[in-house]
Structure formats: structure tokens, C-alpha cells
Length: 149
Ligand SMILES: CC(C)(COP(=O)(O)OP(=O)(O)OC[C@H]1O[C@@H](n2cnc3c(N)ncnc32)[C@H](O)[C@@H]1OP(=O)(O)O)[C@@H](O)C(=O)NCCC(=O)NCCS
Image 1 (cartoon, rainbow, N blue to C red):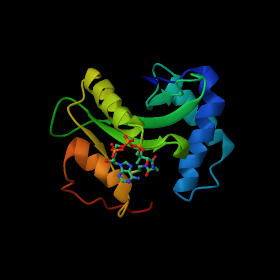
Image 2: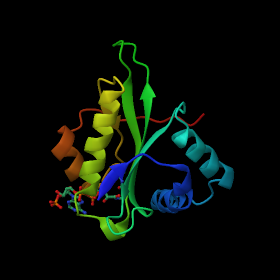
Image 3: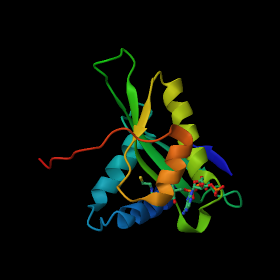
Image 4: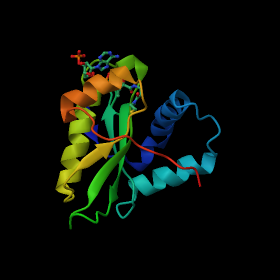
């Protein structure tokens, strides 16, 4: 198993896994150009979205897990914060430690970029994710509010 950034040739396997995550979140109508646009921003070395993936040990062209993250300026510190917007491991590859490794690799990458904190959001009642999250970051102390605009 290896964790790495994405490259241009990963589009098909990345979008297949990303589609599964969106489906898990009940999203089935994402326009095709959004997949292409987001992927282009991830692989662009000057892009504003970052991605890490777990590659299949048997076939490194196949992706089994992904994390996406962005940097956020902070009013409280000079250094930015990092926010992990997505974490997903294919159902066929769960409970092998990949989710945990992806979080730790994301934290390391964000730290290397000068970030002083990594945050992420969990949907209420996602007990499997909660167990993992509390293991790596301790209990959550905040609630999130969303106002559609
Ligand atoms: C949450 C998710 C990323 C975890 O990925 P994973 O690779 O299976 O997690 P890991 O193997 O690293 O698990 C680490 C630990 O977390 C806990 N854990 C993970 N999944 C669990 C489950 N289904 N039930 C109970 N505990 C679980 C366990 O303590 C596990 O350690 P163990 O296997 O030694 O007991 C994965 O289940 C997933 O993609 N779920 C669907 C999408 C999702 O919910 N994403 C998070 C959105 S907030």
C-alpha cells in the first residue's frame, strides 16, 4: 500500500471512487465538468485543492481511498488552517488501516505546507467514522451550521 498525490492518468480511477463517495452522500447529479474541473485543480501544482490517495498494493494504478483538503486563511494565526473536505475508503478495502493512514498523511502534508491545524466535518451518527476520528483527534467540541446561499 502506498499513499501519494494524484497524477493525470489517475482521472478514471479517481472519479470512480469519488462518484462512490458522492453516492454515499446521496449526490447523484454532479455535472461531468465538475469532476474534470476539480481533478484539474487537484493535479495542478498551483491549484487550490489538494488530494492524497491510497494505491492498491497489487495494482498501483487502482485507487482504494482518497482524501481532499484545502487551506483556509485564519484571522487568529499567521499560518493557514487545513480543512479535509473528503475522506473515503472503498468498501472492499475498509478496516485495513487505510482511513487512519490517509488522515495521518493529510495532516503531515498540511503541516509541511505550514498549516497549524487540520479540521474536518462528520455527519451526525456516522459511528464508524467517529471511532476513527476520536482515536486520531480526540472528541469533537464543536457543531457545524450550514446556511444554503
Ligand atoms: C470512515 C472510513 C474512512 C474509515 O476507513 P477505514 O480504512 O475502514 O478505517 P481504518 O481501517 O483506518 O480504521 C481505523 C479504526 O477506526 C475504527 N473503525 C473504522 N471503521 C469502523 C467500523 N465500520 N466500525 C467500527 N469501528 C470502525 C476501528 O477502531 C478501526 O480500527 P480496527 O480496524 O483496528 O478496529 C470508511 O469507513 C469510509 O470511507 N466510510 C464511508 C465514507 C465516510 O463515512 N467518510 C467519512 C465522512 S465524515
